[in-house]
Amino acid sequence: MADNMGNRDTPESPKIDSKIGGFIIIVLLLLVIMMSWMGSSESDGQGSGGSTRISGSDTGLPVLLELGADSCPACRDMVPILAELEQSHADKFTIEHINVGTDRTASQRYGIRYIPVQIFYDAAGTELFRHVGGWSKQEILDKWEELGYPMN
Image 1 (cartoon, rainbow, N blue to C red):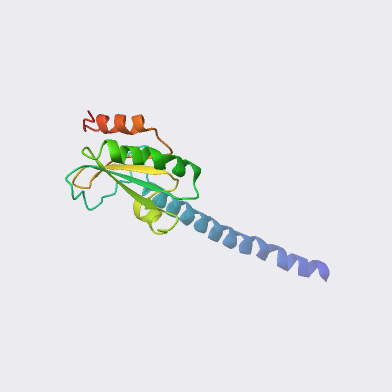
Image 2 (cartoon, rainbow, N blue to C red):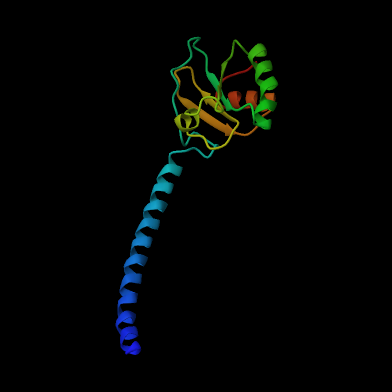
């Protein structure tokens, strides 16, 4: 009699397992699709693939937007570089800062995953380029030149 009970359970087990397996596959496919969609809306930091807009500069100058946090060593390294650029090139572009440690919505709003991030905008507020990581003063100036903004 124990064998009969075992025989009755055996044919049903694969049906239950296949239903659960099918459900798991569907859920996994949905997760992959959602993650791909979310990933495609964020920039990889090497271009303007996740382009954003800002309101534009009140000065009519292009804008360098720096997103970082006080707890980030590379972000702290950028502070004196950006301060020097603010002094030496105030007539060429403006610099704005957003601390993602205190502005929790900024990461999502600007589509960033890593900090620091520098986003280059034209004077109208259209994103031109973004870079992830620390950069030297000269690298920033070279990028402005490459984007068509003379820094001399």
